[in-house]
Image 1 (cartoon, rainbow, N blue to C red):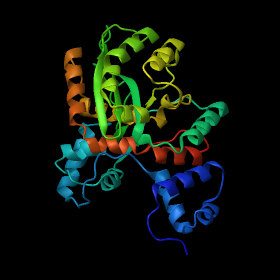
Image 2 (cartoon, rainbow, N blue to C red):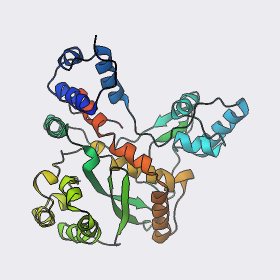
Image 3 (cartoon, rainbow, N blue to C red):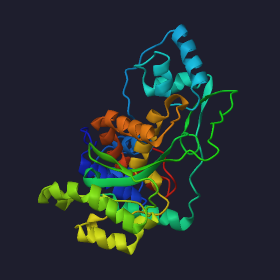
Image 4 (cartoon, rainbow, N blue to C red):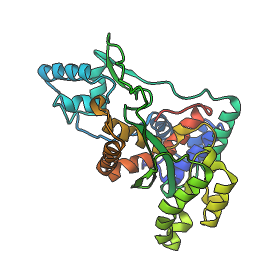
Length: 337
């Protein structure tokens, strides 16, 4: 019989490593001397784990409240289950229960925005998982840019749509509504930012380096040597990020070698900051809200970031082990978190 205590962090890393080598859960349990059910439960839970910003207690709601929920879902198409229930005055219901109730009369609509992955992409994603499966992701600084428009998200965000109803058409300005570009970073429990990219600025390598010099380097320099020695900087493969000029500038800042994470191609699904963008946009566009000016939009973005709790950021950064397990189990295909 295997041990009954919870798996340690080291044992979990071993399991992920063995999975990457194609070893079965039964053989893994023998190698680490743990009960097979314990190992299998860890793998299954990791594959089905979702980032959650709510942990409400499960409770029943009345038929009258349920009617209010349906009316709210009808008036608020393509909003999250939490937003629909809060609008109906039925807060405190768990995410699982909300989704189960909504499925009685509505469906989740998700936009398809990911390009297909070819075999070379999948291999590079799997190699990335192998290279970083032992990483302490609480020391990784996840960074990215995001764009928000005056008229609403570019393409509808995922959300609930009452059966038989059509996706509403957003009003678009004839001359183009414009929007705001901003940059932020998350690490551990901390969100730093957002920082606004000046209007009209094209994010070239030179501008990106200038932006990092203004908004990243001062923060980084203030940290002590022990902190800086552990930090791993992450950004994706956007042209301004991957340019030689950018790599040289980061090296001059002390971000080079193992301190600069090598990111696989076509992998926004592996970056937890993408989930942060979804949270922000759900907040600022709640109820189909649109904006009259870039300044009002920017103020809404800043306000939404202030409302995001440290526990939510922790959940995002802590999801990386589950992403790697799922990535390996799906043989390099996209993961949904």
